[in-house]
Image (cartoon, rainbow, N blue to C red; front, side, top):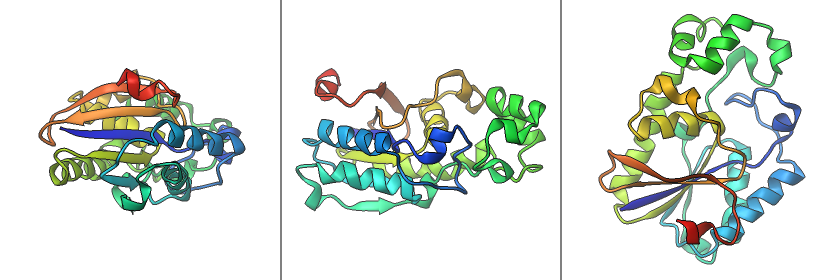
Length: 216
């Protein structure tokens, strides 16, 4: 059984501003974001991770490094930045607030009917389609599971990325990805798989406290 611990990066300045925080922009972690990463590190300090995978964006890499700094076994754990874990690229919207975008029909589809958004608006705004994110991100998990069939793997990434992955890896249609809430910053979600093809959600969006692993 392979166990994946998914952690969305710490809060950033762009998050704090309420703007689109996609794959074409980045900003430093806020004090709250750093504290959240430290809390995750403390909660997972005793987990002997076989591998740590991160989005290459600095907000995710910084979060991963802060988590690893508290880990008892971190000197033996490789940290690998993986392009497939980059956040969905939001084109003309990246870094801007909803008010600035002012494209109500496109926003409605983006937030509620993702496959229709892919078909009708993604190209117009130079936004990476939801389906394209799934195609590049799912193989990262499949490959890691096959390489580490009994491993524990930390994955640090992004809100939309994980929303897409959790939907597809758990066997749901991609079009349903907006029916569940986005993971919060620096919470922990656990996925398991016995074969690298069928994944189950052991728990989702849990706060990193002392009882986290007891609840697993």
